[in-house]
Image (cartoon, rainbow, N blue to C red; front, side):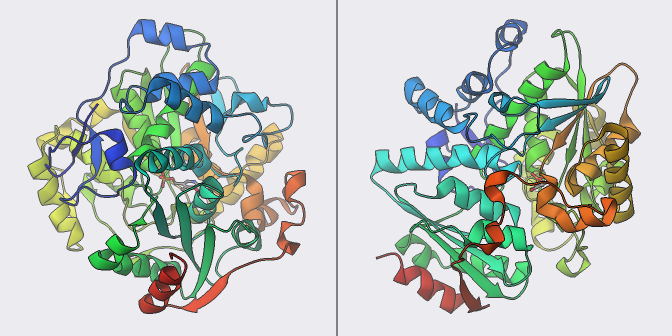
Length: 476
Ligand SMILES: *Cc1c(COP(=O)(O)O)cnc(C)c1O
């Protein structure tokens, strides 16, 4: 399996070649040169497989440059009941992504039972093991530089802690994350993890990461890498749970299902799109946004209008607070019939801060073939949905999942199972749970009192040179 860029670079690249990098040299995103097609027979054979075995079947279609036995070891080590033990009472942790049925044909797929209680663990944990393996093979090492507003940073740190050949430098906005999120990250004591709290906002952190990455000399000298959401391996790992969710929500492979996905950077739902392109019987992909509705707007109108940073709403589902969706280019590439020239022209506009309008094009006429529909949600919707799910089903859900449940309800169709992806546990967003239910979410026993653990964090000004010096001093 080779990978090509959405902007036209067709130099064949293997999975391991693109694993450690970010963008393609032409600024595009990598995608498989074609999607592997699964057969009726595949579905029949895969239906009963446990998660780790299913993951191997799906991922070996995309990862053809790691020997099968090594890949199996890496996947088995990643998807263990122990790592995903924080499931709801009564669910089986060895399912990794247990399905909870709210009512007939309405389900939650739990993706947030990993170490940081958000779905990003599902892919990031595999990335940690893949990085360590490939770096050891190549005798290389990498310094991951990232910016986080909460979930990504902790998922990256828990995935990379203790990994040989990897250091993580994670910038977070000083004093802007919840006490729980701070404790998750700053209480790590692994010698390869460095937390840097920047006096500023998340955007200041992101700007520093961009500035450092744009310094080609520094980047090469200090082997700066990234694990952001455009990383292909993250998307690939997420394809697996669409298969798992499909099998759990159906009795036979003749049925179709709908998935509803709370979306920000379009990474999670992009994996669903690919599963559907591979032939998994998904009828609709329902995209849910919060007040930051740039994607909902596109699926309703055909106009993609990235927002200015100042226009981005700060919401109670903060992991979906985006001004543009970094993975969206992958979908548009497919929608445009893989016309890389056309995609490059559209993103020349996006990169210049402009919008594009496909409303009167042939491409948009094909949109229904791709199964996408969308909707959005507000803070008031979130509170109401959290309350309703609590009173109707006795289940507590987090704010992002609430956005998806709200939108999923608007798109349900008689007789078709709707699977809502549950992307975080409520304890991460306790303030909003308090507001909705006037009680505190329960947390896993092992995480009781983590706010009181000693924390290690370097507080720094929003200064590119200071961050560079910090990194350089620790990479000797
Ligand atoms: C990251 C995140 C999302 C959004 O996922 P994308 O892949 O960026 O669309 C939704 N919910 C939670 C809890 C997240 O952490």
